[in-house]
Length: 217
Image 1 (cartoon, rainbow, N blue to C red):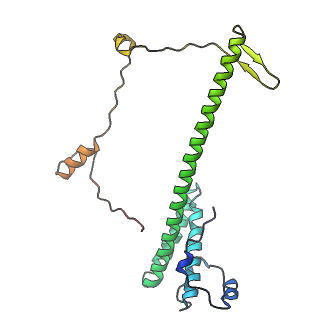
Image 2: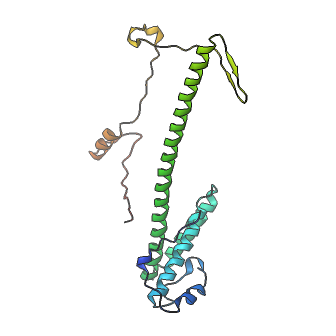
Image 3: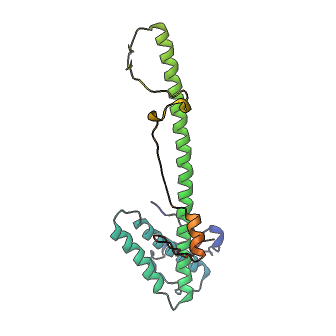
């Protein structure tokens, strides 16, 4: 999966005359070790921020694997890179910000793919519905023309049939109990359990956990 560099063009200063050659000759990102202290130039800081984002995006690609060890290794590398800047607030903020860019990109991509999946699902449902309608119409016409036939042959297709039987319930309330099956399901009442635990009650098999949720904005 190609990770787009999510640094908006409007956030970067315009390149000065002759800066194109400097960008082309810039060294490739050296992992997360890229430091924002190499230059005081806003242009260079923007390039280095892109390098950080690219490096973190490459780590994110490793999270696609089904291998838990590879996933753990990629996450450990990111965490180590952040922890390495414990005493450098500027560098830590830069790496954290680059990580947020990648997170936002991945979530945006996920939302887009979900929209496409829904669109394709709707198209598939429409296609299937039209195919069913055509098939029903075809069968109706040819069975009207040849009522005794159970199979039809065409130049490139065959239409065959088989007998089957199915129960149709006209009035479920009229059925005797011997013809009914009883299904009982149960699940924890989380709302009631939560209120009881918050009130100080001890409930065997349940506990109240406090969590803090985070949101990137």
